[in-house]
Image 1: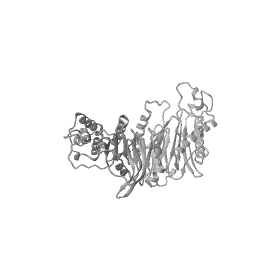
Image 2 (image 1 turned 135 degrees about the vertical axis):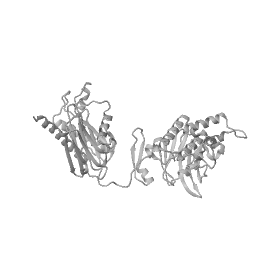
Image 3 (image 1 turned 30 degrees about the vertical axis):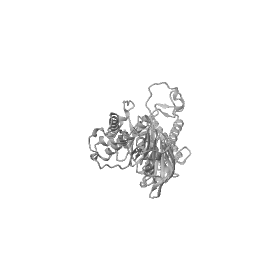
Image 4 (image 1 turned 180 degrees about the vertical axis):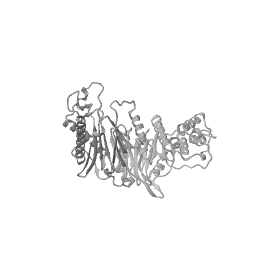
Length: 488
C-alpha cells in the first residue's frame, strides 16, 4: 500500500530524515516509535504529501505521491495530526462532516443521505455522538481528539495516518480507540500508520514497528523483535526492562528508575507465630514466584502467611475465604502471599544460610497424609485423599532473573523429594517413595537487590544453598512431627 524508498528530507535545508526505506502492507497497523527529535512527525508529513522531500520517493498503491491530485489524496488518505486547533465554532457534527468534503458533488457541495450516514456512524464509532450538537470549543482535550478521529474516519480513507492518536486520552479511551482501530483494520482492510510514544500500545496493537533514531532507521519488524530492551535502551538512553504480557503473546516494556533501593537485609524479616499462623513480615517488598492460594504466580509482597486450617476445612471459594481471613487480621491480601496447611505449625523447620555469597532464610511445614509419587500418580483412582500439605518458603537476597526463579522452584522441589525419600515417606497407594503431596506449595521471594543471580539450578551456588536448606527444613519438620507423635 505504501512504499518508502531512500527518503530524505527536513526543514530549511536541514536533513531530519535520512535515507529511509520501508513498506507498509494493506490492512495492517504500522507504528513509528523513537525519542523526541528522531524524525517521526517529519516522516509522517512527507508520507502524506505535506512536506516536500529532498530525495527519494513515496509510492501509494505503486504510484508516486506527487502524481495524485489533492482531492485524490483526500479520498485516499486521512490524517489525524498531533496538534489540530480550530478557531471556528463548529459543532461536533459539523466538524465531523468536514471529513466528507472530498466526496461532496455539485457547485454548492451539498451532503447526501449517504454522507450523513457515514458522519453518524463515525460519531458513534468514536463515542462522540452524545455531544453531537455541542461546540468543539467546549470539549476537553480528550473529547476533541475523538472528534478529530471521527472526522478522519468520515473520509472513509484507505490509509489513516495518526500522529500520537492516544494523546490527551485517558486509559479507558486509549484502549477503546486502539481496539476500534484494530477492528476497522481487520474488517475494512484499512491501512494505519501511527506515531506512538507508548511502547506498550505499539507492542499490543501494531503488526509492524519502525524504530527511528536521529532520523535513521534503527530497526523495523514485528513488535516481538523490536521491543528488545537493549536496543531500546541504546535509542532512548534510559533503563528499560522487557516482560511478557500475561494474556497476549506480546512483550511489555517497563521503565527502570536509576534510583537504587537501600540495602535489603533478610535479618529485617520478622516472624510472628501462633498455633494458627506463621506470619513473616518484611519492611520492604520482595519479588515472589509461588503456587500459593493468595498471591500465586509473580508478584511483589511484604507479608507471607502460612495458615493452619482444620483437616476438615472445605469451602467453595478458598481464595475468597482466605482473603476475608487476612482482612480480619488487618493484612492486605494484595501485598501478601498466603498458603494453607493442616500440618501443625509448631513442627516447622527453619534454616538460615549465609555462605559463598548466598544468603537465604528457608522455612517448611510438612504434612504427609496424602503423600504422592508424582511419577506413579496416574495409577491412582479418583477418590478422596487424606489431608497433608508441604509448604516451603524461601527468602533470598539478590537479583534473580526470571529463569532463576523457575530454577529455584525446581531445585526446591527436587530437594523436597530427596528428603521425603531419605525419611522413608511413601505413596500409600503405589508403595513407592513419595515426591510430595497433592497440594504442595512453594514460594520463592527475592529482595531483587544486590548480587545478580542469573541461575539457580542444582549445581549453582544459589541452587546448592537452596537444595541444602530445603532438605534440612523438610527433614526437621518430619522429625518434629514424629517426635511429637511419640509423646504421651
